[in-house]
Image (tube, rainbow, N blue to C red; front, side, top):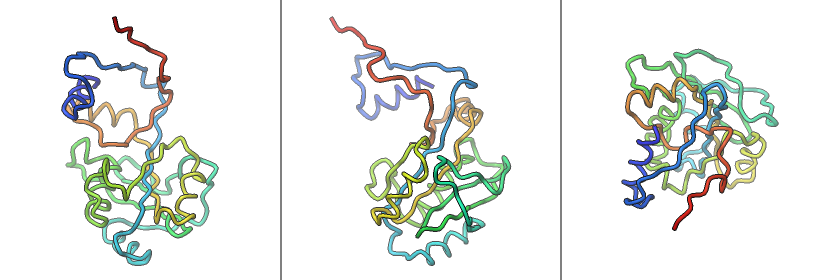
Length: 203
């Protein structure tokens, strides 16, 4: 909720305590498109590609994908289902689908793909514990074509890209209803409120 966001920004010293206001905008859930939020990884923490894939196979079922339309902004899931986590990986010019059965006892946050990626890969394998501040990770909104995402991997600037499936509106609602906060960089919403569209006059 916007109240939760305000409290978080206040705790982070990102709003003035006496402002007492935080701009928010409401959309009907069926008028909003939610995209994934992709992760670019600068290095594999000393692992080569084969070692990295081997470690991933201890945590996921890993399937290589022969062809991906990089003009699109998402990779269609080969394995679908509400009880399945699906994450795509671009590594050394190859595409992979990572799948893992969801834990039915997990809370609304832990049921998200971004949480599974953070816990099992970024934390456990790559020691990226603070995705907001670690320079080894960068984020790309899911509205961007895949070709633009992976070019930074092909150039060598980054070692890998994780392409995330979009969360559903119901997942966002479930997190809010549980009084929880979505993980950082887990949703890219469209439409967005234009900068400067709303101005508060200061006297």
